[in-house]
Amino acid sequence: MAGLTVLGENRLQEAESKATLVPGASWHLIGPLQSNKARRAVELFDVIESVDSVELARRLDRLAGELRRAPLGVFLQANVDRDEAKAGFLPDAMEAELADLGALPNLRLLGLMTVGRLVGSAEEARPTFRRLRELSERLRGAVPVLGAGLSMGMTDDYPVAVEEGATVIRVGRALFGARQTG
Image (cartoon, rainbow, N blue to C red; front, top):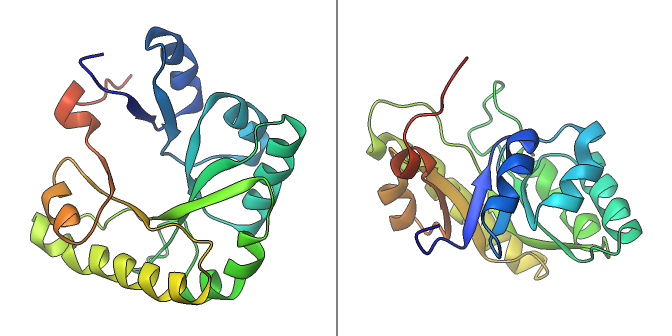
């Protein structure tokens, strides 16, 4: 697919229909994961970027071990803006749980992920991206098992996310157009 080797999908069901169309691609789940779909997600995806709770991490760890899919790469979703409408660990909670999460034997903590606030301009998203980078630097100093990956930024704000240290960006709309609804 035009040289792309890492692809992401928001929805498990949509990835199931697409994965066979791109042989050799690495698939990332970038949308929320319901615990009742965790088994299928572990079977299908190479990386899950939306681990937003200790309970989900433990479930993925158990399933990855059962399915001999270890280690499963994950990003921990951080709610650095403390936005009640967003999922993810609050920074203090993540800090308190990180050592235990890092000890899960079947997960590899690749880094942190955040979903930026809906803002009028890309520059307005910078504080969110900066907070994620700073949180990552602080946590990696305390718990070195956390990888340096930063999944942040989408089609409208990825240049600012890259300036703030993004290593993974989500630009599906720029590549494929707006998602069809209906």
